[in-house]
Image 1 (cartoon, helix red, strand yellow):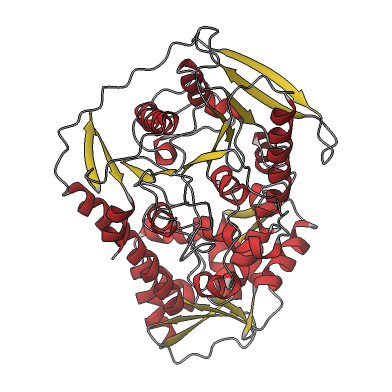
Image 2 (cartoon, helix red, strand yellow):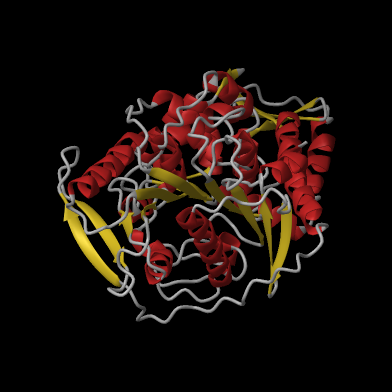
Length: 522
């Protein structure tokens, strides 16, 4: 459709008839400027393509299906008064994206981020929804310029990043299969061993008590493990999404507390989906860190029934970032400069960079790392902009990172593997990548089977990847393996392979140490 449309516009732009001076859309493509009258465009669209005009003549050269696609695109609601999109535009991340789009779409030679946002708000004060055509007609300008050449450059950058991700999967796939085999994972029954308790913890920085889930080992296993774990969901996550992991850990003797972070939990996402509030972002990190600090203090006072003298921090996505920050990893200097570079490419193939860049505007509380910290587990972690060279955590704290080949929020090449290489050298530090897994593969929703669940998160295969229950089972086994090594104090043998390729059913799992990651990235 795009090829046909712009071929027609090339012919139309070459017409000797003058273009209207006002209400003009100028499309820049392949070094040429193609002027289009917005008035003529609107009249043609509203007539359903029946209006006889010079513009209509050229649009009518398109195939009927393509012509209908153009009309539907311009008449479709772009945004409505109570939509999630409106709330996103009002967030920090939305404003950054609008600013960057301003380099591609200009109003009277000026960047359009604020102009577009202001115009949308004015239109929504008058009507319940706004279409793309209505926005074009309402922009306060004589000329709106769409720079498709610049957009193609950005698209080429996205394509390069995706090709690099694909190359990573291909290189990993060439690793010979390890003779070590992992057992086929089985789903735990609904009524599992271990005790789930819920506890309300009063905290001074919140109006309401902090809600905690405690997964406690069976009495026969209680006290047999040295470590206790704190599990932090990602942005918009719920403790219920990680019951599968809390249950599995407690069944194997580890006590676990799962935090619920008000303001950046499932309740906040529900408000976003209903158009009642902007999406939470990095501004929630200070309160998340205070939540964690209060839990650690409560355990130290004996207010939580969690035994153990070693602490392991576990987090998914933003929860993993919280774990690193709590471990003493403050961002490296120069974050603003690094962000200016990556934002020029609209980081839609690595959305975590929006959160990382927002951190430069957030005052993070300065908590010392816990003295009892023995390990960190980061599921779909990120931090390539925060720590491009070195993650300043203690060298005696091993880290387990995990990621998936279908993750475009925290893609493994730049995030997990980049983070792995930047961590202090430690023979126990590892990354586990699962081919076919996505950013949301670790998220278990009620009734999930294959991908869909009866939950606020109606996650299909395009979000959770393939075989999410099997992926979760593999991650569980890797986390248990990591914790067993911590528990026994066993140091990983240096003769162990830098990279291992394991297959379980249709899934391929790649286990890498820091040397293996460095070779892939060089």
